[in-house]
Length: 180
Image (cartoon, rainbow, N blue to C red; front, top):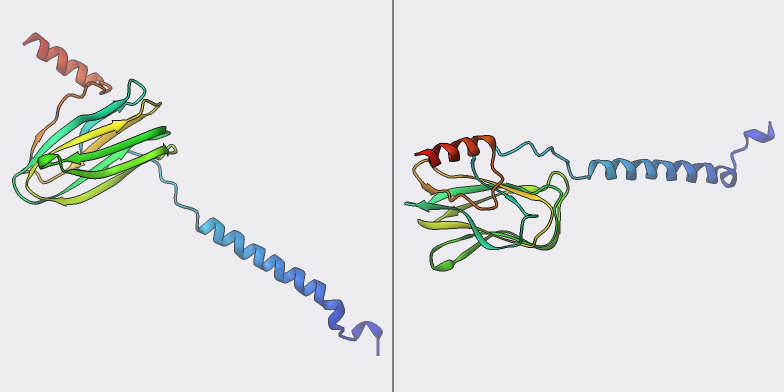
């Protein structure tokens, strides 16, 4: 009998523990990689969403500024899509103001930060009435873009927001309107 062929649990234990530790570490790494939130590119609004406003948050602080208004003749599902990439602000509030100044919160945060994919979608079934989309935000670097989706039989009153970043098409339209 050869001396090395004797199974000694005391000599095999460190190797067994090292293997178990490596396996546990491997599993932890796999779980950590699989549990990371998915990073999706911010590619714009989903289909069928209409532009409401684009606001340069560095221009000034905003206190319940009305970005747009819509009137529902009947109960309807309304969705709002917004992007606010790379925002770092001390206060941000986006809400709908309904009849009797009832406030429906879309997003409210203090000490709010987003990455390059900052934004989201809000949906709610709303009762008939007029709703105004209002923004309250501290002055900070960043741009808020807002779009909404609602049934086609809804009347929309989209005010030209003074913080809007005009596009070339907006400039052409406003020049045409000034000539009339």
